[in-house]
Image 1 (cartoon, helix red, strand yellow):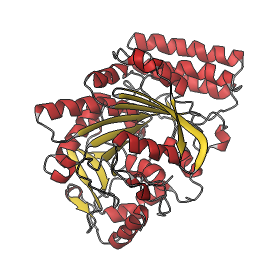
Image 2 (spheres, rainbow, N blue to C red):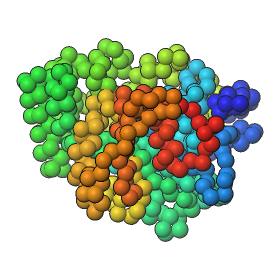
Image 3 (cartoon, rainbow, N blue to C red):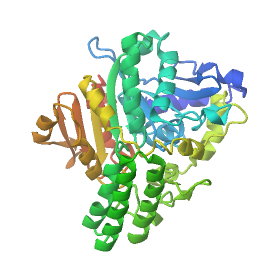
Image 4 (cartoon, rainbow, N blue to C red):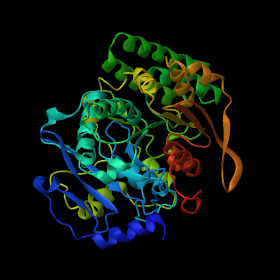
Length: 462
């Protein structure tokens, strides 16, 4: 039986069997009778509660030498829900219609989803002063979560943990990665750390905003006037970042997005081949307190998954809420938390290149992957910040030829990879911001290579 079919069966058996909606109940660990799923809350700080959901793959194999890996999926935003979006719209076992996903990552790994930072999705705070204001604070909360989950669970300890991040989640991944290394070394955390993979990740805002104008002119979405306006605002952002004026840089970033939309006739920031009108999420939403604009990508992913017609909001606040049985009555799931984004406005534009350098120097496996058609975290910008790394292996990495990548059922080129020592870069063709959705075949192939999954060919899907 397929991975998703088994999990669908466990969902149906469990549905309506759990009913409780108090904060006390929310602190319990709950799961399916067969152990294929477990979930719960961890109070990562007093009055700050983080929700997690772990799936164990029915394809797990133990060949004695290569342990079965676990992936902690880190969603972006900041303030986007991994439990809802990453799970039901990208890589989890079921889509928003609760139909099996043929490309689920459970074919290769166990999956741990979190609603991070606190205040996102089902996670909540009892006091609004407890929202995190920096990536380091988010990493501290996630480390507290991992300590609670791993230190008394020998089964989890045997499975190497990989952080796989999307969009702003990449900033969480690199700061969390350093926090994990420190906690493991001190004996505070008991786990095997496999490495990190940052997909279309907002590691260096400066490099991305400088990529927008030239890229869009190259593909004829901006003319020379539009490119000049874009570059002018990018220069302003660069100066504000250099001066440590990060909130001002966030506001200027909003102005730059407006200028891009105006001069390109509303290009889509997640796939520059599209118009915003072709992508229902592309319209920006003004925040109540300032001019920061955010992109709520749950609806975009729904539009990409043609087989899925269900609303993720309805699902998460309906059937899934009932299944989980521990969500407090006053907590409503939301795909994107405005409050979380606002709290992180001062850190949003802060680069995390140094953290990548530190991870590489510590010998941590670092993978970068980038969708060819993304604009918001364009490959051109990713390549620019990678070239700023101080890592000693960079010159040799840059000299290497790329290796073309294919999928088993299609002989056409699907991407490229370049690897040197503990650094790996994947170029994913035909994909925009959401690589697992746009090129699921190559995403699965890449996942197996990153995690060294012992999954057999028969349990894999292209």
